[in-house]
Image (cartoon, rainbow, N blue to C red; front, side, top):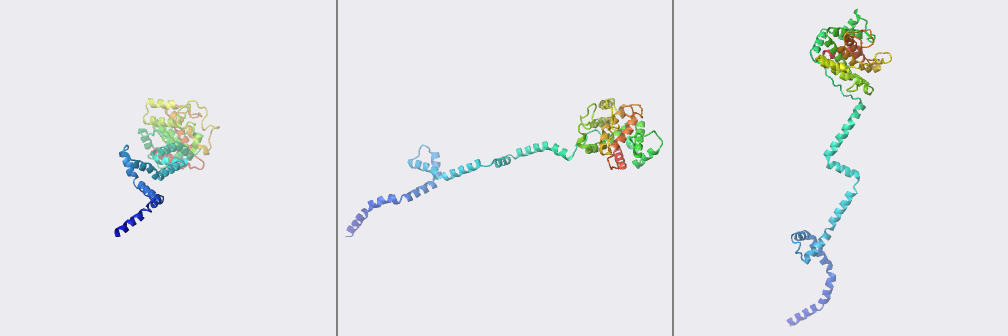
Length: 349
């Protein structure tokens, strides 16, 4: 009886089986799909490895997994696509900044190049002028100049004393007692020792020249003060350089270089009535300082009463050149005593 009952139970269980079997495919596909998705999501790397190792031995199941693997990785591809779209939509400024970050040396070098190009403009705007480049006397003649001034306790007092002594008429443009004495002192020194007298003029001119450049600024550009600006002769800067070299080495070659730098065609001078500068434009006096130093080297005797250094004796050009060196620094409100003490310091340095 027990066996019979079990058989009936089995038969009863088998009867509804077809219906349950028909219902199972409809009820369990989601679960099966879920399991398949989990399987695919969990094993894409392994499927990829198998595909890489055995590309021709793929089973249908492996093929199905390989086909579904890209579907499982679709979000990642989408992310890459969106990031690519973002990079495509990046503004030009951002791309430029990222490019600058990726190439820092290029950016720095371009900045340096830009700075190098704009530097001259900024310096010109600030009025900064490159210092003059000329030889400064340092030989025996300079030492003899120091010796000639070694006993002078106050150069201003000495110039004033010399102005009160009997002597030749002063140059009309030595219009102060201190300048009269300066002219007489320089003329006498150059007469007794031409090299030391020219050295005094060159040192005084080299002392004042950078100050004149700063005072004149752009007004002096192209007027024969610097470098190769000379038209019929060398520039003032070059003339002072050649004269300084002659002072240290008074050879015929250096004398000829000084001679070649002289402008022999000037019909008017800075101190002529039509050109005489006011104290506000005192720097214009230095247009003649190189010429005066040069003729003090190459000229001989002459007439001090002439209006031009082309005809003055050499020592007169040296003495009056010192007056020009001081007049070029005598701006409105300046102190002539301070100017002369500064020149004295330059001569005895």
